[in-house]
Amino acid sequence: MRYFIITYGCQMNKSDSERLSSFLKDNGLSVASSIKEADLILVNICSVRQKAVDRAEAKIKEIKKLKKTICLTGCLLDKDRKRFEKIVDFIFKIKDVSDLHKVIKKKKKIIPDYFKIKPDQSNFIPIMTGCNNFCTYCVVPYTRGREISRKPEEIIKEAEYLIKKGAKIIWLLGQNVNSYEHNFPELLKKVYQLPGKFWLQFISSHPKDFSEELIKAMKRCRINYLNLPVQSGDDEILKKMNRPYNIKSYKEKIKKIKKEIPGIALSTDIIVGFPGEKRKHFENTKKLFKEIGYDMAYINKYSPREGTEANLLKDTVSPKEKKKRERELTAILAETALKNNKKYLGKTIEVLVIEKNIAVTKSNKKIKINPSEIGHFKKIKVTKACSWGLSSL
Ligand code: SAH
Ligand code: SF4
Ligand code: F3S
Image 1: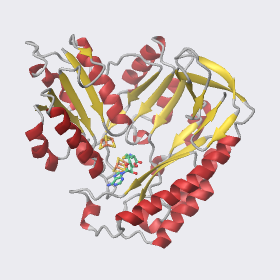
Image 2 (image 1 turned 90 degrees about the horizontal axis):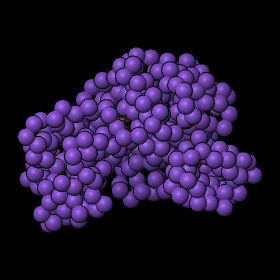
Image 3 (image 1 turned 90 degrees about the vertical axis):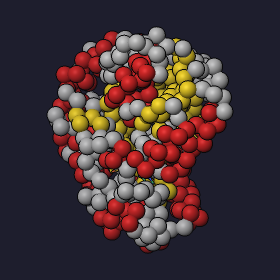
Image 4 (image 1 turned 30 degrees about the vertical axis):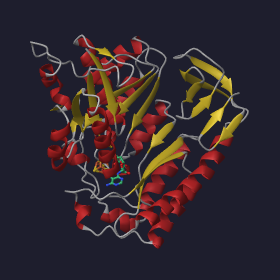
């Protein structure tokens, strides 16, 4: 039996798909190179925006015509369940992956070693799942439930195994890694101290929990990339979003991190067009973008989600205006990212080859390279810089 996994959403879902794939291989299935060649299709869905749900639904309907067995997992809202039940063969929770034995026709229910994954050059290790923050726009606390942290010993053992097997980048993952209940800065340091050559990264962190201790740990662990989602550059909107920090404190944290780790690449997540976001609020987000000078930003147009608090507010910003605000921010980002990338020009830096012609820097930037062996570190000279990447050709 051959399977094919289609993944929507964030790194958490990508990580779950990697683990699902390992589970299926351990049960004697093999991965198909395309949907057409697969007997079993697994769709790992994201519900964060309506568009993501609609895309998954359209894809499933298209696959259905091929008469394949389709299983659905991931972040699914109760309100969508009935709709999906009609078009897929089986819905399962990722933590109950062993229920799949019904579909893969194993007589015995195989208990998965859920946290076992196949080593790759870049590996995700979930350290916690779920979220307790209830930002007013967000479904994640409903789809993933409350925060559950894994034990440090388990995470360290897994990292050790992956590094031994050749992992070159270890990504510690969580909806909010710094609310990790067993001391995140300590965990970072412990993983960093493991023997072997590898880079350490983490994603994502919440500004409210971003501590000085963590900045120190990042410096010690030679971390050179940080995603610190701000969501809006306006205090009034942040309050309505239930994001418990203000722009002044956010900027202070960024200032400290830039001082401790000069040249650190910064990224953020933004929502444009939150209910009640007027021009004057949005102008504050633009101002923040210019001041911080991000390397990367995930700019999302607000999408009302049933069951969330913000859904009770009127979606006041038109789709056209949301698009316009997205474009305006992207234009600022293109300038700041280019300015940051130009600093690499003429420098010889260490990169990790992730595809034959593409490598990644420690600051998480893509760089074009001459054909090289995948999974190797290499020193190269940067010859070109643009907004969305570098080149050594
Ligand atoms: N835990 C992370 C983000 C996880 S969700 C954090 O707090 O930063 C990933 C991103 O999706 C969020 O950062 C947000 O920008 C976006 N998002 C979440 N709900 C959304 C909604 N209803 N409409 C548009 N974007 C949304
Ligand atoms: Fe969603 Fe907020 Fe939790 Fe992030 S912190 S997952 S945006 S509720
Ligand atoms: Fe991620 Fe989407 Fe779930 S953003 S946590 S896959 S709802």
